Length: 90
Image 1 (cartoon, rainbow, N blue to C red):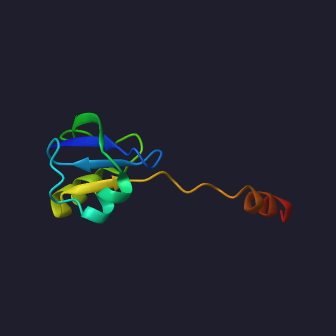
Image 2 (image 1 turned 180 degrees about the vertical axis):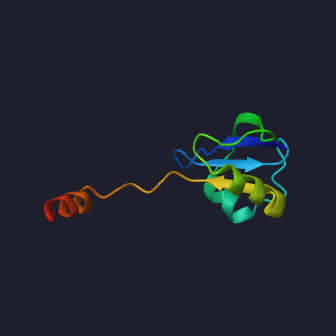
């Protein structure tokens, strides 16, 4: 299973995985508007891979098969105040 990964020009650390190069036909228009102009990052063969650096490979495969794309967003930024309050209560 091949996939093509694009980097967002509007959102840092956000990537869009699709099945074929430059084929965004199954990606919702609203998602593409918020994503910006997709910048080609790499083509990747998922066959035989057990993991990816920043995404759950089983979720990527499932999303590609079911909806034709997978959107990878960065993890939420941890609140330093919440970390401090949690540490202070210990």
